[in-house]
Amino acid sequence: QKEVEQNSGPLSVPEGAIASLNCTYSDRGSQSFFWYRQYSGKSPELIMSIYSNGDKEDGRFTAQLNKASQYVSLLIRDSQPSDSATYLCALRPAVGAGSYQLTFGKGTKLSVIP
Amino acid sequence: ETGVTQTPRHLVMGMTNKKSLKCEQHLGHNAMYWYKQSAKKPLELMFVYNFKEQTENNSVPSRFSPECPNSSHLFLHLHTLQPEDSALYLCASSQVLDNEQFFGPGTRLTVL
Image 1 (cartoon, one colour):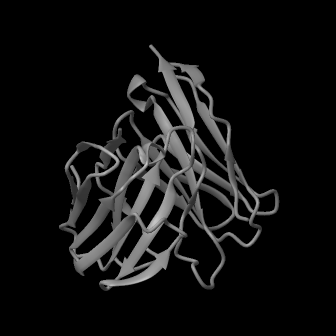
Image 2 (image 1 turned 60 degrees about the horizontal axis):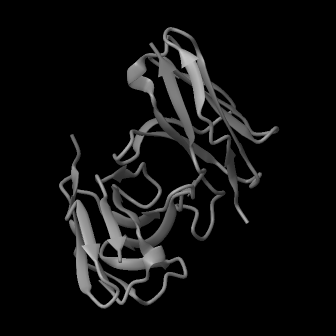
């Protein structure tokens, strides 16, 4: 059973602060990890993907992956009210049958307070 | 801005109705997906099509029937649904199966 765990929140941070979103997973063989942002009433939008241990930065977003500890996180620097959304963690399992399937967490709701 | 469109955006239907959801992608992708998103539950993959061929059916009840006439279009035919089927139904596409998936805006379905 592949599971992806996220704190549902809401996570409230003041504008300009760093928001830290965390995700743990049970399938040690997972290879690919993704963060999607979903605004209320909208569809998920891919914002970051990470495949190897370490940090990956893209603008104000940094994804961090630690396969040994089975967690992946998303840091949002200089948080803006427009970052307020639900952030979904997703992973793709190891190579093999059905390895293209994404398993999603329930999401963490982020609220950036002006 | 999205290359994946879905219609209708909202649908209310009775348990005895038959309706269809439509998805169209304008990205030249070859794989298309149906997901269900219920409140307080993770996104659930329902069906996967690759080059028009169904490659996955994740134990979805037969009251949901997918159809993929070509790589750009995907339908979800609904009949005799239950109130617990009320959810946001999302279509997604990717270039190939293990590429990044892009989602459509979804159809908010309410079953009375």
